[in-house]
Length: 81
Image 1 (tube, rainbow, N blue to C red):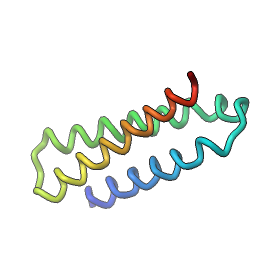
Image 2 (cartoon, helix red, strand yellow):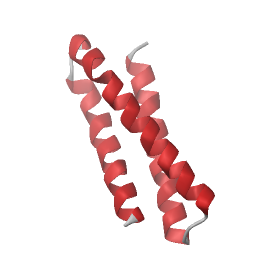
Image 3 (tube, rainbow, N blue to C red):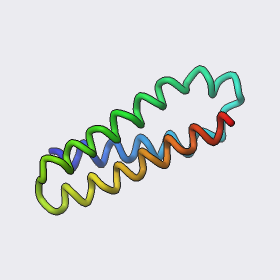
């Protein structure tokens, strides 16, 4: 179940990252709070799963999901510069 949650959150972050270039500046600012909340929650949940020390596949998926969330946050910051 935890791996499924991580996979869904990773997919949402990837999908959201690809959509960043599709919006104009006004629409992008309106959706930015939702994107930031999604990325931060994904990163924090992934970090919690790593700290709990689950199974090896769960730790690997948590690290991958955390990196995807950090990439998403980086793209958000880059788009707003």
